[in-house]
Amino acid sequence: MNVRTLVSMALLVGIGAVLHAVIPGLFAGMKPDMMLAMMFLAILLFPNAKAVGLVGVATGFISAMTTTFPGGQLPNIIDKIITAFVVFALVAVLRNYRQTVIGAVVLAAVGTVISGTVFLTAALLLVGLPGGTAFSALFVAVVLPTAALNAAAMAIVYPIAAAIFRRMNVTAHV
Image (cartoon, rainbow, N blue to C red; front, side):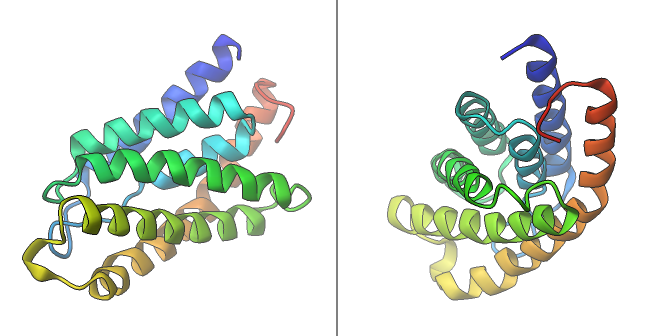
């Protein structure tokens, strides 16, 4: 991994951290995780195992620091690392479609649903859900709207980022 790649990923994670910190919680302390969109963008732009592992760990720790979910620190770390590698596997399988806006949007939506499922499962097993809230209620109230929001964000951001990174010649995968 070269310095340009590391700096580019750090910028994406930083943008995601700001988005994650400023968006308010919606339901039982959960908030839309816009950091996921930036993590998915990094995976699409830099699809190699080292980069994916690094961005998954960094995103997990930063979202753990900014979470409003009671006891959500460890579930956030677990969720981001697992989700990063699952999305990386999907990117590898869907190699022909990853460079399209539609492919990026679908990966963002599917990745967000995977992330939400892993997070809620980890939270349920490790700390319990707050106030006896049902898994399905949180899934419908937070995860599905977040998937739509991340898909819309990816539709806007991916073409812009891909063009910028192509011009900068940071990666050959765009």
